[in-house]
Every structure is written in C-alpha cells, then in structure tokens.
Amino acid sequence: MTPFEELVSIVARLREPGGCPWDREQTLKSMRPYLVEEAYEVIDAIEGGSPAPLQEELGDLLFQVVLLARMGEEQGLFDIQTVSRGIADKMVRRHPHVFDPEHVSSEDEGSVAAWEARKARERGAERSMLDGLPTALPALVRAHRVGEKVARVGFDWPDRAAVRAKVDEELAELDEALVSGDAAAIEHEYGDVLLALSNLGRFVGVGAEEALRSANSRFGRRFRAVEGIAAERGLLLHELDDQALDALWEEVKRRGDLVV
Image (tube, rainbow, N blue to C red; front, side):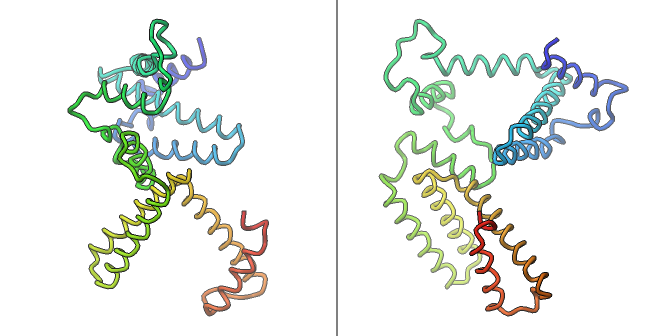
C-alpha cells in the first residue's frame, strides 16, 4: 500500500461508524472554512522558506482534499479516483505539445495564450473566461487574476505609464467623492482605486495580496517594537501625543533589524 492509499484508507475509517466523531459530522459545506484555513497555512509555510513546515502543511491540505472526496463518494457523486482521473485527463488534454506524440507544435504552444485558447474550447462560447475564478477568493487576489485573464485576450492598458495614469485618475475621483461626503460614492471610488493599484502591481510584477501581506507584517513588527521601547522607558502609548508617537516610529524604522 502506498502512503497515499494508506491516507485514503485512514480517511475512510475516520468516516465510518466507530470512527472520529468530528470527522463523521462534517459535510461538504462545513469543511469550507477549514479548507481555506489550510490553504493559507500552506502560503505561510511557503513564505517561511523552511521545507519541514511546508511538507506538514501540504499534508494537512491533502487530508482536506481526500476527506472531501470521501464525502463525495459516500453521496455517490465521485471518489478520489475519479477526482484524480479528472485532473490527470485535463492536464494531458491541455498539454498536447507535451503528451501527444502526433501533435504538431507551434512556437507559442506552451504560452499562456495557447493555454487560454484550449480552455476556451473546453468552455464553449456560452461561458465567460472569468467563470473559473471563485468569487470567494480574497478580493485583491481576484482583482489580480481577473486582470491577468482579460489581459490574455488583449483587454489591458498598453504600458505601465497608462495604468499608472489610471491610478491618478481614480484617486482624483475618490477625492471628489470624499468632498461630496456620499458614502456609497466613496466606497465605489475607493474600490476603483484598489482595482487600479492591483493592475499597476501586475504591470510591475507585484501581487497586491502579497504586497499587502508584507506591509501588514512589516507594520506589525514595527508597532510591536514601538510598544517594546515605550515599555522599556515606562511610557504609555495612549498618553503620548502625535509628535512623541512619530518619534518612536521613526526610531524603530531606523533600526534595520526591525524593519526587514
């Protein structure tokens, strides 16, 4: 028995009478938050750069996939074998230049455009190329992916300067909304600014979600350092004025080991 087959067997046992009460009471819908959590733990492990945590988190994510497939099997919908067969067939079908010995390859066969063309043929004319993007994706991630997808059919700004100008345009419209005080208009224009910034990130090779995650982490480290300095000096942050708080913040920023 391979390790994967053993995992499938373990999951089946957990779901059977006499198995784990928690695993037995889960449903496809109840597993949604756990699946998202495990996916983000994989991302954290990738960013951590250490192989051992990544291996562990990939295992946890794989468990979620096998458990969901088991639930599908119990309902007569599918099982892990049909799930595996489906993705294997899809990958072979979408890579004819790799797997089909009789396929005549062109220079752009492995390009993103060729990939999208094969996906479009599978979708058929009645479906949008955006249909495959989950609406539950984090908004910044979805904005980036939407931009990538529509760009593949030429729906994009011509260059970085043009998309940078779009950011200025949206900021100006946000300023107008702020002056008006219209809450709905402010939300609308603020969203447009974020979308434009996401597209700018795409043009410069920076993912908006990743950039914001890094900024959040950086701010958190710096703010904890500010708290530490204040505690060392017997200061209470809520009692300090803006000038004193800014001075502490700038002091922390000058400490290179804290602003990575």
